[in-house]
Image (cartoon, rainbow, N blue to C red):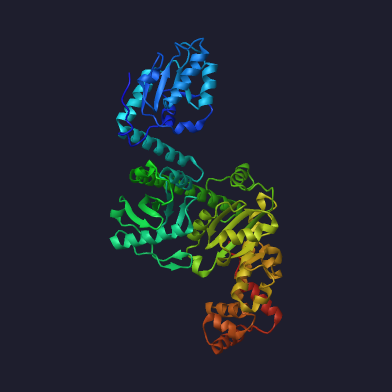
Length: 567
């Protein structure tokens, strides 16, 4: 059985590697040179006669059981030489019929001439191999479909990776071949192939935005404001399933919106760079980018579900450890279950463990959780375990690292200039977390007071900017943090009741005290005239008999009106 040479008809070239990779055939390459796997195959034929190349063509596969070769090493060598001279792609040798293994003389000659030899198991008939080759060559579309399904399986395997999105991007790039970029709706790169240059990435953003604007299929190009963009590439509903073609200086490009039910759409873009080799793979770009888009949607949804589950675990654990509020589903503090949760998140007390409270600057306070989610997602490995949650507009952080690296870790992880930090003493045990949380909150109150009070800048400059350890807090802060929270609140309420201060008086006196008894600064804090400030303070002095120049009374007022750490 044989067939004509199909080299002129087959645009999607069949290779030796594709034949050997079919599990159902069970073929196995026994010669050492693996570079031969790229050899083309244009036919297959079995023979048991002398001079078999009379009935075959170049780039064919020759198949034999070795019937005429038994006990004839010279003929074995001559056969290999003949096949090599005729341009035969490979020799398939059947086992367990006339030979239990490929003859030594034949193997030596094959290695010498560089002729690939593969074994054919007893259960596989030559007809199966020939039929497979014929089908692939006679139906290029079937071969292309087989390749496409194989590629899809390869991309789907990325879902099993730790970071499925980045893994899929890195797998997709060499298959096209092309540079690949994944963009969010603000035009920023979420992930990209390793070969993507900064210049090409910037051009993708600009050209894709221009295409969307001119075609009316998306929002206006983004206006850059710092590192973030103001106007998103928000795709219209009609764009979500459409491929967008555009050009870059690096080569032609395709893009498609990647939709996930749990988050905003992203853009997947492929750029066929001019210096990349011309391979059939890019011809599969149209169906392949759609397939990759669907797989990315699954990856995004899966990542979002895992992220939500991870956040819920952290939220419950921090609440349980720090005593912020009752947490359902966790055992009491100090139990083995709580320790197991900590170990799972990387907190094993092999290094010092700290509790920190972070307060965002005013422009980030309302969206702190969104900012932190985005930042920590893109940060990668911070070098130490970090778990956190937002409570009462503050980020509560538990981390484990060496003392010298603590401040750098907090500033780098949470975006230094945006946050102020109060840090506890090292946690001594699981049951010590509530006390350490209170210490961190107390330190945060003090460091924020430094940040907003210019009179305290001289002291604040002696401390690491925006990071204050509880051990460096003032005596007042230390005493308040050590007191029982409920008893302190009861005492403050009782003393305020004795003073019979109305709300305006409380605000006025507190501003006066926190401005270091400076009437002008206190008035500026309240947004009133200094004379109005003096009037209010005189009213407090006259109505309540308080001497605002007496040190002991000032201390009493300060402690009574001092805002407790946010618990």
